[in-house]
Image 1 (tube, rainbow, N blue to C red):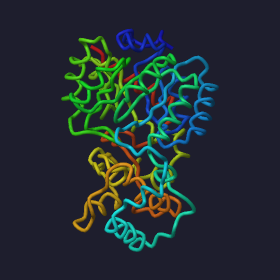
Image 2 (image 1 turned 180 degrees about the vertical axis):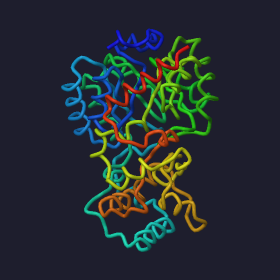
Image 3 (image 1 turned 45 degrees about the vertical axis):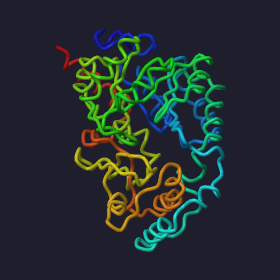
Length: 365
């Protein structure tokens, strides 16, 4: 794989991890993760909303597909979460005004109750669940662990002792300073352009600062947010990054299609770079997603301010599950970055990666 790639794209981090190109791919679909790793990149499974049993099954399945090639897993590990996975305790804290607003959405769009909890409400984002997820990963042979919204000291230490490489996602210099006190193998500088949970600083403003901060400790940095073409990859490397972290790029791949309702897949294909919005409505934290009636409802003057994580998860989790189950198209949505406008056709992962790498080599000067 590396023989056909310009050596200038094979950074020290890429070589150290045994990769064939500088693409790190975050995705909730294990088929995408395995295909990225099979094609020289490093696929990273987004596993935060997966049960420990699902994580174990997914990691075992991916390893069977990729052989000795490297791959990773990502967990969001925010501080301040409740100790126990106790939904009833969380529900008792939900204000009546918020309950009424959610009930109003059910009524306005004539949404039947779902057949069970939604993806965000089938368990509570708690310390108990995080510890179970972490233990499952420690018991696996996954190569890389990426931590989003926090990298707890004890968990980082445990991953390192288990021989895993550990990466932390940061969205500001303040986040980077905290992360660099830990024994991390790399940082991901994630700019405002990025999909899902994201911050307020643009990628090109953030990346050089994080690179300079990390250089003193010899910690490599990846660039995330708005990376959509080979030109973006070369630009990131020119600013000191040793690879790129891409998520939105895989949402419209052939391998991911079965993971999304068809209406959501069509919205992603149709979206332009100005069709996303940052909202707290899904999790309580800022999350970039495709603009839909869902985000508009929560931006209305009548809407209450979204609750903190994990209260918002439990408040709206069953509703989001019912929306997808019953195909309530105006409200159906997906996290996506501003780069979504570059991915308006369906491609297999391998073809998308080949195109990105050819664009990057063509952009070198």
